[in-house]
Image (cartoon, rainbow over all chains, first blue to last red; front, side, top):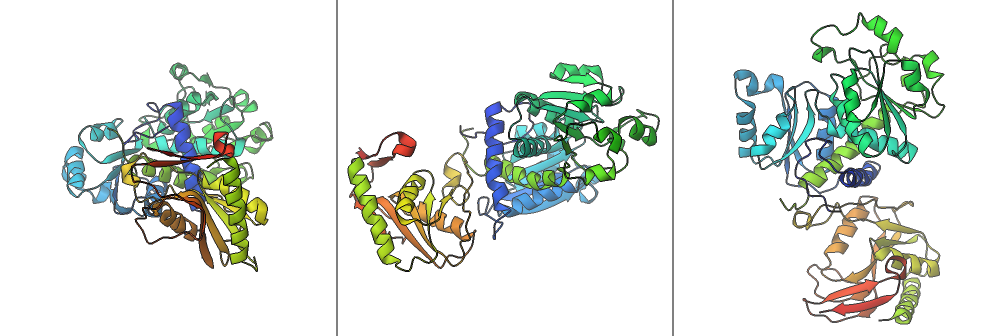
Length: 309
Length: 162
């Protein structure tokens, strides 16, 4: 297979072959991080702009380090420092970046579809680093990379995504990716945050946490997105933790080899107890390491070679 | 070149590698993907030395001219201080070897790097020369040299295509 995409806008549009090609490429870049010299010249002379119109530390840092390990130059633009607060439109900001010959624009925006909008009129590669509650493709790819590395496959695994599904772009990207690769996906959490309508995505919806975690090979815990919830979706944090948090007692009833994942930042004592987050079945920090490799692969494939379009 | 000729050439090259590195302390072979790897394995089988695989996808100088592709280099031994023999099927412009040396340097500092190729077809574009050659084959720029190896292609043969 030859990679032909200049942009990575979402998982939904990717074929199974493209996802596998990307995950295989990420394996090569993971190895770069383990060498004496952790830098390769693949994107030498290219400029990457991190355009983050919504707060983020980990994703932005990960993209920045990924670009630097590929020898690209990096500029970071965040909301508070940007002229967007002075009234400039997103389109004008992006056109200005392109006038500076930016080759890659990594965008995070609170509006779903913002990266797709930029891709319509920019020559630069557009990488979606999270658009509203829509998609967060590199997170889903790094989750899949981690599962594949630990379990050797994705097909036929039972993956439970637990928590705030409604407001989660991570959940949507994960659902698309995991179902494409043949996993059985179960969504669980309070009915206000995990509506039945998600069954249309080809996954199972349950509000019974015991049943959701019992047969799971992978449990992916999502954070409650306080910043995205317009009104209270559950009575209190304490009640959420009691009803749906992964505590020691529930943990003891999971499969002995079930992986515990979390995209971060974790809220200890809410969706996950501290001891579980730090246990040897938790792969939360490995997800961070793998995120770097996956983002290097995405940047390399989208901006590194020649594409027909 | 048929299977027997390829095997004779590789046997001779293995002997030359030993003659050139008589103390054999820290000698290792590293094959360049894809076809350099089986050749390195055949040579290593006669030399009893460690072997690795290099993928040069991240160091190509023609990255902007082709679809992007990258694989994992596999070097399980410490490169530092070793004498490394890079192995490839065909030496042509020398650009693959340049990329391979850059990739190898990322793993450490070898004491010496030598180059073994089954076919040298000429037309170098960089100041690179082989230390061990299976066969010199004068070619025209428009011709293609194809090396088929049993491990990947099912049979051993070297052919020149117009």
